Image (cartoon, rainbow, N blue to C red; front, side):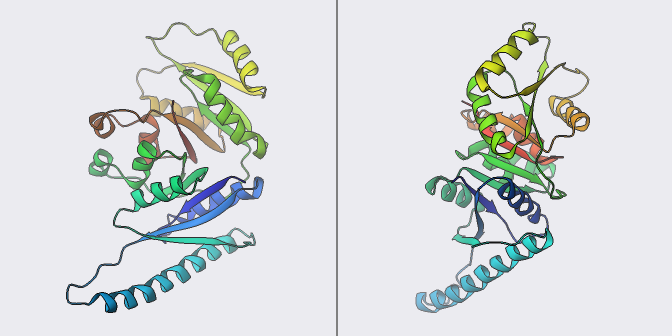
Length: 277
């Protein structure tokens, strides 16, 4: 059974990620683990024994709060939870803790809510964009205003590079959900003219899945993100899938953020990001 690590910091915004994960699990047999990273500072004057006793009490409180928080989200969407699994991790860096726990325990996906970011955080990254840029486990980013609804259609934004490998992952995710897949590609002036018929034949051959194709010319006035958002407004998918290239230099990761990481700051629909090979 595939597993999803669902993160929360107990904020109202983070409930969106829980709602989406619960919806996914209602459509497919995903095992959900709800995860919270905490950090308790030790007063300098305290002995190790005194701090350990205090920390144990605090951890028990945090774990109880986590269970109550998760149960409240289940109740809000009218779904009964079964064998809720909650995990805590002590770390000064929540994003690193999430990545390491997900990788070590072989999770299929990480699910996290996003609430946007200011200009400074756009440069240095948020937990969400850092996960997208560095996590070996695919990341699901859920906008804070997400309302629970059946996942019926998926928009896959593609550059048509390594199409067979990417389609395999997209279809593997969509098929158990009985979700329709639409492939979106934007032609640019630098591209060789794309023969949509050839691509259509290749898509059917690779995936053995009924996929609707959308080939559009890039609107040079708008950014690629704006073009994707326009396509989302038109097709109204339940979620978006993108692939991001992670093996870039540190300079590129900081100053030339991936399209998927940039989109995550103002996501309109849940976004699933795979590492692009």
